[in-house]
Image 1 (cartoon, rainbow, N blue to C red):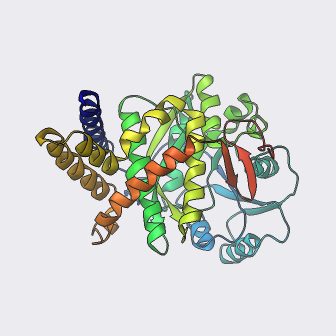
Image 2 (cartoon, rainbow, N blue to C red; image 1 turned 45 degrees about the vertical axis):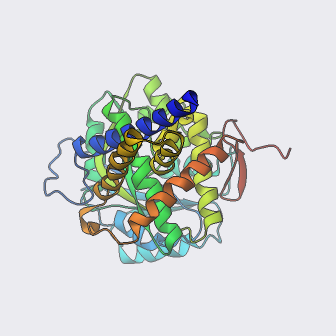
Image 3 (cartoon, rainbow, N blue to C red; image 1 turned 90 degrees about the vertical axis):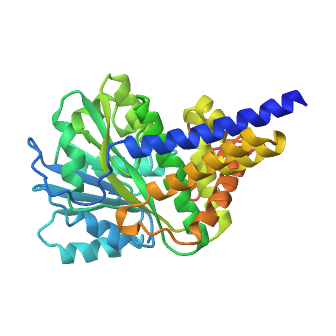
Amino acid sequence: MDGIYWLGTGLSTAAAGYACAALCAVLKGPRARSSSSGDNSIPHLLPVSVLKPLHGAEPRLYENLRDFCLQAHPDYELVLGVREPEDPAITVVRQLRTEFPRLVITLVVDPRIYGANLKVSNLMNMLPHARHDWLVLADSDISVPADYLVRVTGPLAEPDVGIVTCLYRGIAQHGIWASVGRLFIDDWFAPSVRLAHAFGSTRFAFGSTIALRRDTLQAIGGFEALRDTLADDFWLGELTRQLRLRTVLSDMVVGTDVSETHLPALWAHELRWLRTIRAIAPLGFAMSFVCFTSPMLLLGVVLAPGAWTAGLAVVGGCARILLNISQRPSSHAALPWYEVLLIPLRDGLSLLEWAAALTGWRVRWHGQVLHARGDGPASSS
């Protein structure tokens, strides 16, 4: 019984400690910029090519791409790529070309495949059409403010910078499962990155934004070096770090759409994320169960009932709620009444997904079955 008691005490202490530490990292970290700050006078800005691989008619594709047409940067172009001539995203691109005739918007339609990662193949097809030496790669479901390009490309003027990347916040579209998915990003993923960054880690890169110079891309072997990787964004950053170049976490926070309306779709999406994280950082992933505050605090109280674990449950629970509130942008500061009720559901679902991620490596992505740990498509076995 002593062993079970100490296990419960340890779980309560770890879960409450993580919740408090994550809250401190979020509160003490640099204030995220999710809108224009009024001062965009960063020197040495060079022309920028924005590369955005597209795939299908995503729910807010027009609105998200339009954000990139309204940038305050003085000289930039958009290079948008699809694989199929029938891709419905082409209609959106043509609409934007008509709406913004003075902006250079290049559409690349190229079906060539070079490896297991179709997104990287798309980027390889798009790169020859990019005219500028400063590059920004951004996923298609990202929404950004007008000063985005100015903020994220400014650090590239420093020669020791390899990449600049951005954290992102979730934007729930419709339904409870989209809200639960938003909490995965805002309440678990983003705080864990901020906590790691507070301890000095820069071992990350996010598909929401990666800004880099063309010569840096060439030095790591180009997109060809990523063509069989699942976590292409992470490995792009990792290869630049191997060149002893710095990774900069921008103070710009962008938005990413969370549009899953059913639990199976949300489960599959988040399981892919977690198995990818497991492949990249196995030790950190193995210990990440302490991040799922609600079930860990409950388990601690069950295994070791008493004043100490009850007090930790109160402290950890309050920190968990404050973490949720502190991560919300100012424009959405009012906490919906039901969101507090979603926190235990979110944490419990995350723990189940974490356990499921330990049982295999296969993930589904854009109709493909890939192996999170391997170099190519998963075998049929």
